[in-house]
Length: 117
Image 1: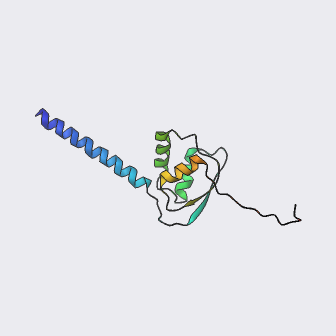
Image 2: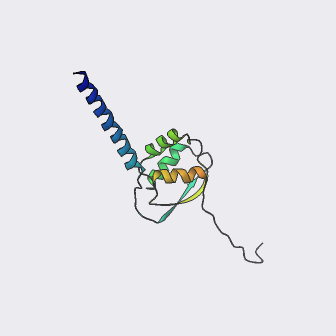
Image 3: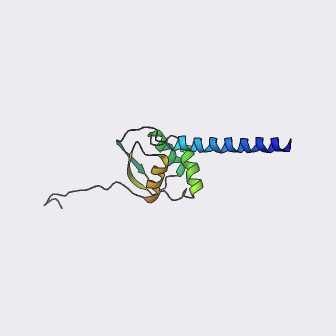
């Protein structure tokens, strides 16, 4: 009888683990599979909640909650860099997270014609 209970508990643990992994995999996927780039700005003082909601609203991530949980797990909830970004719409939530934490922004090239300075 004790072996049956232990086997049942192990089965429940394995199913729970697979459900958690499956859910994380699903929410990490890109909501759109388009290579087009979308401009996205993070203003000075923007909170993680606001950034996550805006990324979800612009269809760059599937779930703001998943991004917030990811930052808590990785300890990067205070590491987002302000600036202007250009994200391809086929990036995963983890890839977008890593780009914002690293601060890799859009570089703009400006040419000032001679005589305009």
